[in-house]
Image (cartoon, rainbow, N blue to C red; front, side, top):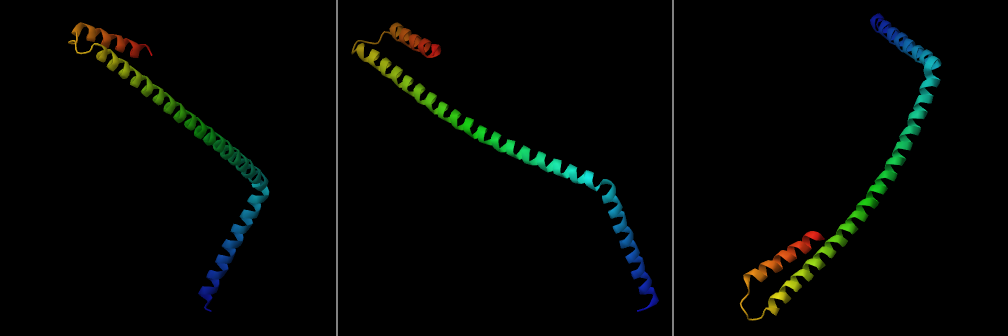
Length: 119
């Protein structure tokens, strides 16, 4: 090897040696503190993830209950509307072949609207 290459290798060894010495000193001074911080952060991370999982499960449970309630209410409203339509049809049939009195029909529709609005 030429002298030029030997010098370069010696410098690289010294740089690596200095860097490793600095790392050793750094670890001696603040290594324990950093390790304890790392442990605390890991504990916090695990705790947060566990709580997130619980919250996600609660959200899914509430979503399921809400969907069930909405379906129940929708079914109930549909049943009531069907009953109201049947009652209106029955009232119209009761009038028979007699011409439908506009005033009476208007009153029936107002009564129907009030019943719907009150529920």
